[in-house]
Image (cartoon, rainbow, N blue to C red; front, top):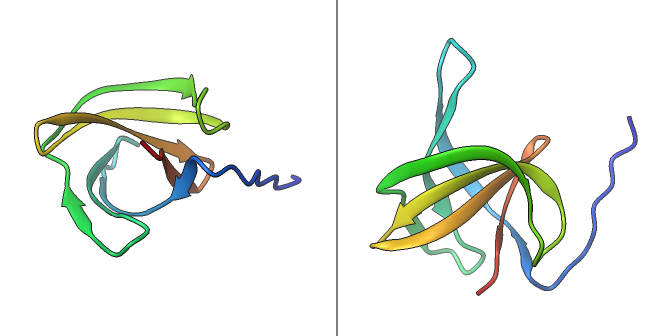
Length: 85
């Protein structure tokens, strides 16, 4: 399989702490932003396959609540990314 990585200024790869369940579900718990700040995910409200129209790329999109705001976290193959605001 050929790995493709597209550089886009609005696409930020992040480190994610997640729980992996025996049935295959993945639940992200927190992420580390590119400046080193750590954000806890209050809850995940939706999980679906979707494209990031702003930053490019496609994968599983996790709609998360972080500090009362909605944030989209994408899992693209084995990497996690977010869109810059």
